[in-house]
Length: 84
Image (cartoon, rainbow, N blue to C red):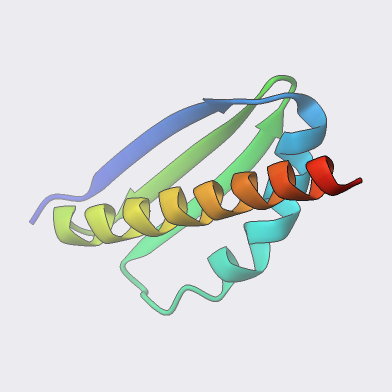
């Protein structure tokens, strides 16, 4: 099977992007599969997400995980900001 590389951008304000990266970094570093590598790099106004996988199945699974983690992190930031 061929290897897969995926890149995504999520546009956010800088503060939210930094909070989200910090909140999901532990989960990304503890992903148990050796078939995928995910890197999230905050930039001004966005998150750059780079995913490399050994095959398409691993790429799909890793991208689903990253999207779910980002969604949960974003929703948490929204709730906490509303409470403050």
